[in-house]
Length: 597
Image (cartoon, rainbow, N blue to C red; front, side, top):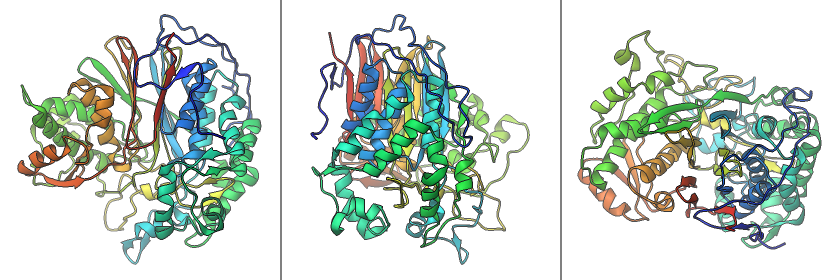
């Protein structure tokens, strides 16, 4: 089978589009929901929505050409952006398993044009019931990250399949079975291995157990050798798992032999975890209210905790209070750096699972608090510290937490989709580190999401907001974001992978397009600048990165130069003449849109 080609109805473009062809489809699926074994009450037939005055067609910006084509296939059939999102991600789990998959989880932000509402669907993994706050501690010190990453303790209950079903029940137009067809086809017939996957396998063999773990070793290292770029790779086990999910719904995944295989892999030595089939069966995704805030004449919406999406409101608003009048690019970048430093410090201290701790999002976004923070920026040479909204706004003192500097490796995948009706999805999906925990079950890799919790615990100190707690969701940097214009209409869909750098990567596109005068592609291409903690990392492999790094060094910042960054930004802008999309050249993403008539 050849690598994906552009179908006749579609064209791979990075600029505008026009009307797509009409098609109709309905969904009558009523497969069981996760953890219940009972039909979903929301799995009702949905008619194709009216297009109204939306004549811009569709667009998908996804991290791999196969997955982009799968999304476009669903959209060309008249599917909702959610149908396309599920199809795209089921393919990503096959062709980009180092970044996300069925064994992980993610966040999906959905904009419905008819209602103007933005909803947040939370498919984040959860800690097993047997998890303990000190499970990553050894002799009074946190377990070495590499050991924690490769342990069964790192595996949380996967949320991806339950998230699929929740999203499809609420928004899907095409039949449930249809959205899995592209991935099943590719897994059966084979796909061409890309450079991104292939170049990481030798390194993984030297630093992880991926080449030793049952299932993973045979798949990624046949006959002891890593698969090569350009090689045709089949995964019949993955196809069989998807066929069962398509036919039986999430119950096929969260109970029975697939759940047993997941639990067995997580419990295996070395450092086996406590994940059980009961933990898996109990999993439920969550519908949460998106966090939305004003910035200039736009409304910025993103994912609430355990996501870090609120930073997409904090950073631009802090930036506006920090940037001087008549600022040049250097002034703007410094304001961007200072805004990040303040926002990251607050995020690191206050954010955790909102079902376990009170996260003061409303107070952190209060204009009076943002004004105070911007009026007191951290000096360039100092390490940023969190603020205290209660001291500024009054009211009850906020809970005291331990400091937390949890590192999230730069894995994950993001995609942005707009359908023929003007609905949109911004979704960020993950297995956490590269290839997750490296543990294999039923044709896919399991996550190591538990290492996203604060692993450092001392009984004589307060608990971190992001401490390990049974059943909790770990804090995430994933920040899928949708912007609306002053009329409440869709303006931008953005987001990125990249671990702790995700908030910085994503905010760069917002400021770049709206304030720095960059085109969509130029904003994506612009050097990444990440300012978390005492260092400011500047990507000098892209101009004007070297110049900006020098300017920041001269201003007193502790600059760390980076030859390249692991962003995977995928952005769609509603322009005056149509949809404008961009894929990050740092990864392998593409953009597909309705063919011009």
